[in-house]
Structure formats: C-alpha cells, structure tokens
Amino acid sequence: MEAQTAIEISDAEWEVMRVAWTLGQVTSSQVAEIMADKMGWKTATVKTLLGRLIKKGALRSEKHGRAFTYYPTVEEQPSMDMAVKTLFGHMCQMRVGQTLTDLVNQVTLSQADIAQLQAVLAKKAPTAPAMVDCDCVPGERC
Amino acid sequence: MEAQTAIEISDAEWEVMRVAWTLGQVTSSQVAEIMADKMGWKTATVKTLLGRLIKKGALRSEKHGRAFTYYPTVEEQPSMDMAVKTLFGHMCQMRVGQTLTDLVNQVTLSQADIAQLQAVLAKKAPTAPAMVDCDCVPGERC
DNA sequence: TTTTTGTGTTTACGCTTGTAAACTATAAGA
DNA sequence: TCTTATAGTTTACAAGCGTAAACACAAAAA
Image (cartoon, rainbow over the protein chains, first blue to last red):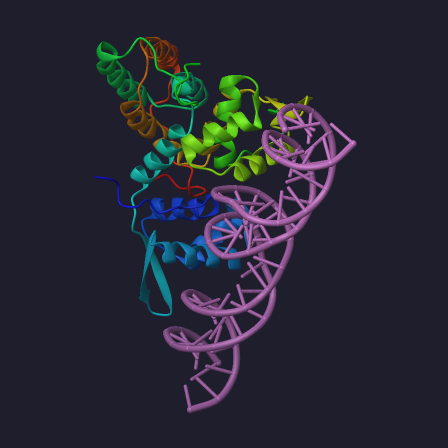
C-alpha cells in the first residue's frame, strides 16, 4: 500500500496551500491580497497558481455567486510529512540523525512538541541499532 | 552573516553528490557505473550532471592522465542541513514539531543519534515556549 | 604512427516552475 | 437592460531540470 500517488506541489504553490490550509476556504481575491502582502506577487500570479493547484487536484472550487471558493483537498500534515520524508529519503541515511539534531537545534518547539519527541525517542531507544549504514554507494560502507 | 550564497543542487545532481561525498573523489566512469546500477541512468546523463555540478561550483575537477578526477567543494552535512532548513522554513511553523515527531517515527536512528537528540531536547525544554504560532497568514493565528 | 576508445563538451528537447499580461464571460450595479 | 468591474481561462516566456545523443579530442593500444 502506498500513499495515494503524491500530488507534486511546487514551492510557490505551497505558499498558496498554506493560506488555504490555514483558512480552510478562500477566495482568489483573499489569497491575492495575502500574497501581495506576504510575497509581493501580482494578482495574475495567484490566479495562475490557483489554476495549477486545481488542475493538480490539491484544491477544489465551488461557485458562489460571481466568484469561486477554493478548498484544500489534501491535508496539511500528511503533505508536510510526505515532503519531509521525500527529502530525507534522498539523503545519506547515516547522516539523518545528525541532520535531525542540527534541525532541532535551529527550530522553535513548544513544550508539548518537545515532550512528544522525547516520548517517541524513549520508545525507540531500546530497539535502536548501534549504527546506521551509509546507502549512498551500493555495497559500500562510508 | 549568512551561509555563502547556497549552491542550488537539484534532485538528480544530489544523487551524484552523494557518491562524490561518500567516496571523497571520483572519476566519471566510476559515477557512471554506480548510477547505471543505482538509478538506471545512461552514461550521458551522468556526464551532463557532472558538468552542471562543476558549473555550479559544487564539484571541482583535476586532470589526471586521460580522465578527470572530481572532488566535492561543498561539504555534505552543511548541505543537508541547509536543504532541510529551507524545506522547514517554508512550512507552517506551528506544525514543525508534529512533523519532526512523525519523521522520527519513520526513520532509523542509531543509539548515538537518539542520545544526541535527547540531549538537545533536554537543553531546549527549559526555555521552550508554551506554543508556537502559525505564520501562514499575516496576522492570523490558526 | 595510425587507429581506437574512453572522456569531456555541445546541443537537444519536452516538462515544470515562477511570474505575469491579455482575453473572456458573467454577476452586480446603474 | 446596459455597463462595468471582477473572477476565471489562455497565452507567454525565460530558466531550470531530467534525460540523453552527437561531436570532438587526446591518450592508449595496435
């Protein structure tokens, strides 16, 4: 089983999805206004991105009066998880741990986030291997 | 201060860098053989990617006899850190913690990795905020 | 020395992306 | 009903990317 043929969302499109996810539903003028402010994009740019997201199936639209209302059809957290997993999947597995440590050092986490992470780590510890092999070159250990 | 004008390495190029990083130095035929095996790429494809990486400055080459030897000019760990940081920087900050937890649940970490992460988390805990705000829409909390 | 072959360089080509203008249709206001 | 503003659709266009063939050159083999 695999997670339904992952829709590819580009960086610019991702920004649009963020506001759609956060607001739950949006009109193009709303997004245009926000993106003008946040990204400096022209209205035309937002229209293009909305159109592409509809075509990709990441958004759906419903006609209400003159304008459409757009709704996300994919969920935010799974999308984030997938994007992150894809990135880490392309990296040397031996270095994933260090990379995570470096990242945790840089981001802001809430008390709850930290507690949750600690819980997961505690559960993993007992069965963790002594070391993780490099998988960059077939049949080669770093 | 900012980390030297980040060289952009594409997905396919990244695969080439991985073998260069792991082996320290490589010849094109070496890379070609590995990529034929690992990715199913033709020799020509590898040549193109090596050329682009040279042009981008991610690799440098030294002529030895008939062929060139290629060396990475950027380091692996900082490159990984930067790629990861960039991805997370484009995501809702409020969801970074959950995303990290989901990720940790999926990857393989060594005992040492886990210990290191636990140490960093323990150090962060005392000063961690109660919650992290959503930054997807200017002046909006989720 | 001549031929061959392994390397690097150029050219190719369709697709995606970022960024946007132009065009069109229709709801809303006059 | 006629006009206008506004939202959606088409077209644009250069740069980057994945994927590779064609070409040129020099080193190695004959």
